[in-house]
Image (tube, rainbow, N blue to C red):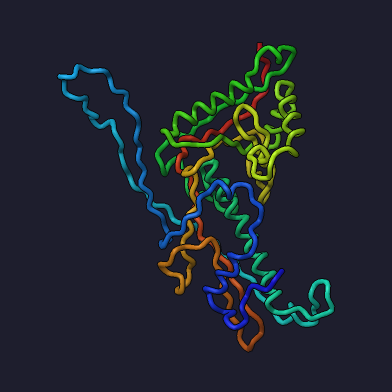
Length: 342
């Protein structure tokens, strides 16, 4: 990895922060869905407008216009705090002394070791932010333990959580009907009714491993799945069809990861969400340091201090994200079930 820390200004918060943001990001799946927005405060106030369309009846031209009578946009403001995700490591003389650079016989430099530690710290925090993004896609964001609630977007926006069931038929009659496709289309209709005219490009769903196996292995879906597998090489790197199996107008992305002993998505669940500009935001608040107070937030911050008697350095990296879905009423949690369908 090339050196990115200028030796003449190694301890500046500005230079360290610039360095950490230049390091490569992990290839995480949910990050492209979220619009990055820096803010100057540690909490974000959001105006929520519960507007709806009103059908206007035909009237005599001499009559007075209809009155909205309270049926128009209602506005409320809610405030959510950004998470504070600091992580630190130390560079000690033993990390450098008698250690050669990778692939050479030359002694390793301090800057190279610091770069490696910065990247390790950044990757751990970025994975944690991705966990928050997945929470926003599900509508409920938890801390890293998977049980401590940070915020429930359904409560914050005062909307009802949408749920649905996908029935996988068993028995000899499975080719007569396709309840799988019907369940998917019903879920999409639920979401579309709640979008309120927000333009979107498609729907995606994070899907648990058992649900994914039922979907892709069922005889009603097996042929489209095999066609999707066979055609992946023909699509460009940015083609959304490479993100997951596309069926029923939904891109199904298997999420079988386990973090801290908990599955990211329950094995029999799927979480459908709209994809489009304005659906998801990640607000980045300033770091918890004097130098960065009231400045526009950055995705990552880094700072380094020398230890007493020149016995090494302490390095801290932090992020202060708030990941939200702006239309939680358009999220749909689906459950897989098997049943005989006549």
